[in-house]
Length: 356
Image (cartoon, rainbow, N blue to C red):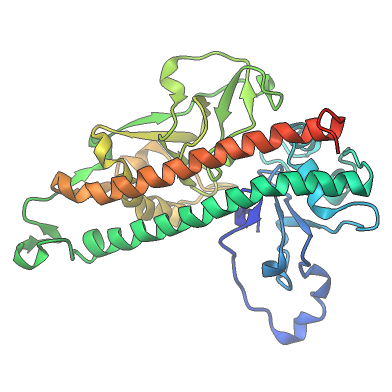
């Protein structure tokens, strides 16, 4: 499914069991190592390179599966070509749909890419894969930090087994000395600006912008030449939430960027609460994602955000969450730098500025 494609990899798989009598009929949808999965609706620029881990899984109807003729091209090389900002821009320009972009096999088959000799492809893949390996190692550490923060949040704020809980009176689910407060009283909520889409570009012209599709990765290749008030500028480390379809939640790891309509940012009044709030908002926002119904996609609105409440507690209990948050943010920022360096290398390797 499109939502399972993140940062060039298949993530958070939507697992469904297929009856045996249908297995053979669905055989042509099975994923092979080296296939490229492409989102066919919404964020049509999102793609993932598959490995041995995904071998035998089924490609859902929301994705297109690209199998490369390995006599002519190395699959990983083609994947790098498809991730180029100008390639993504071409795909978006040629995708169809007025409210949601859609991609089909005919459009994807006509994506223009350069295919040098196999030896040159192999060299380029070797150079760029070194960056991918570093990014992947960081992603593994990020996942461990996220899991640790989630476990701690559940233990302290859901099960209420926080330090000193044995001697703390709890009334109506609120420990003595704690409070249940409205999220909007704890954070500054900034909603995105309704930009003129005709000024969007993928050629790095102007100011970076954050659209819904940019939130899962925490960075962007989208820009605008339009200038708006500084209140719409998002800074590295700000908490972001998408407000259409999938209500993505993440912290921003790119440079200063404008916040686009149907996204919002949460800036805590106490910076020490940022790591805690990243955990605390997850369940209520995902609840709305599963219950809010729209004409075509679900819409998260101000009226929903205004109803969210969270537990607040003595400041010392926020400390471990902030440490997890800062370690995670450091790794996210490293990955942004590695991705930028990798993407700058590709055209230089292709042009011969860096020789094989």
